Length: 158
Image 1 (cartoon, one colour):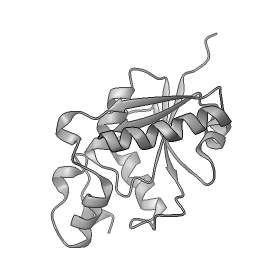
Image 2: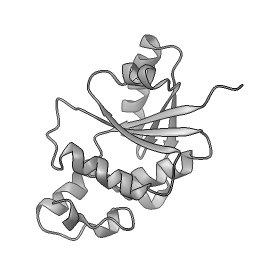
Image 3: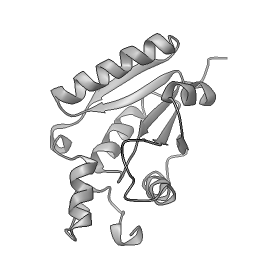
Image 4: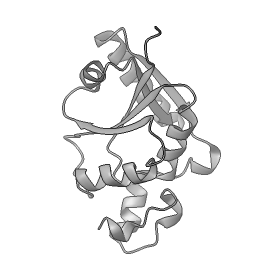
């Protein structure tokens, strides 16, 4: 029997955007299971609670049984090992993202040679979307709906 191809898609997802959704949906044909994993980030304070972020993501993928949602503390590679995932999925929007993700992927490869990093370019229409900007729109009372997955009403999570 072939080993299941499991990928972890880590991030803070504060909030989960259309760009994140696009990366996951495009990766679904590559893996048997994708675990969208909310990592604790010592540098970032969360705007949405962990529970609300998990609920938001589960709502987006409620009809996709191959998508799981989890959270973790510590090193992403340790979480991958715990989940028996041999792939780390990341989205790339810009050259700066590439440089950052390349450095992390190389460090992860040194620590966990059995885990491959898969970097997907975002589609052009989602390149400008990032959680920090979307969060600022929400924080200041703006309408961020066009940047969030269909069906996510931000009012339900505030």
